[in-house]
Amino acid sequence: MDPQRPTIVPGETPAAYVPCPHPEDADHDSVAGAGAGAGAGAGAGPDGPVRDSREEKSRRRRRLEYPPAPEPLPVPVIDNHAHLDFRDGMLTVEVAEALAVAEAVGVSGVIGVGYDVASSEFSVRAAQEHRRMKAAVALHPNEAPQLVADGGFEDAFARIVELSAEDQVVAVGESGMDRFRTGEEGMAAQRESFARHIELAVDRGLALQIHDRDAHDDVVAGLDDAPRIPESVVFHCFSGDAELARICNDNGWFMSFAGTVTFNNAAGLREALAIADPRLILVETDTPFLTPHPYRGRPNAPYLIPQTLRFMAEHRDTTVESLGQQVMYNTVQAYGSWT
Image (cartoon, rainbow, N blue to C red; front, side, top):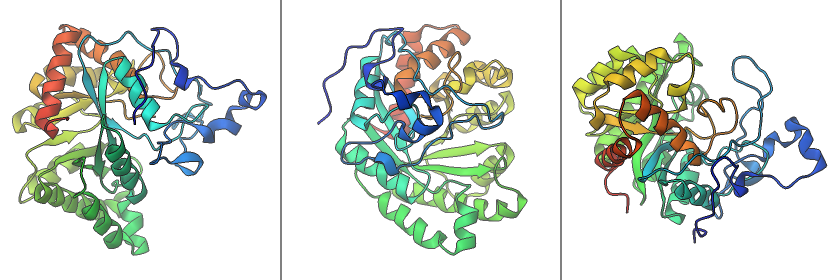
């Protein structure tokens, strides 16, 4: 059972995300492994994946305190993409608590997304246990080359195929292409994996959630080359510029904006947001990553969606209520009814 909706005070970190004081908490490196995402009955617990306590590029130590809660939204929206199995911050937050806190600020549901077999299994179990969660299952593009090299790709993909038939699965993802972490030697494996995931989404009648990092041309080519593509194609954490936004507009592909759109160095991304067809806009956290400004680098959670959505509404010169209603409508168009 999901807990009752907690009381949220804007400007204060939700109680579920505030650790009990212990002397050892002063050492952030020692508590980095105790972060968010364990789900009651479906949880990663202390054995789940752990986000690095240092920033990806600069390697500077991150602040591990969760940000304060924003003002609740006037209308409900869905977090299009989150990894609730990842542990981050200074404490463990169960899935039920994360969903309850999110709902208290107007985030009425979350799509939990898989990136390997274990995380896909986690997302399916959590979605089956918590009414406000749906699941996506897939092998991440950076997993594919290693799985092929180890001879484990076929078994892993067969398990994804099994999971994709489970109740509460609404998408195949995240799959796609990534040139940031994988060199040219791994591109053939990524392309084959992406093609297989596209085919699976079509066969199951599911949406496709795409991971695209430094690989816009590769992703578009993969979609163009596919014999069939799903009715709903979603660019998770949309990272393109106005050119890619126009391609998405022309093809009816959804663009899901994350906290990155609020970053000071994201002018091109904001140009894309400005011209995106409103019928194709979604919003996400990519929890525990990509926390919106001014909390960049700190742990992310679904309750921070209002921070990003308000920025998006201001940039598009519309109201939060209007954009929120449109995003919720788009979410249902992409994935079907939420109930």
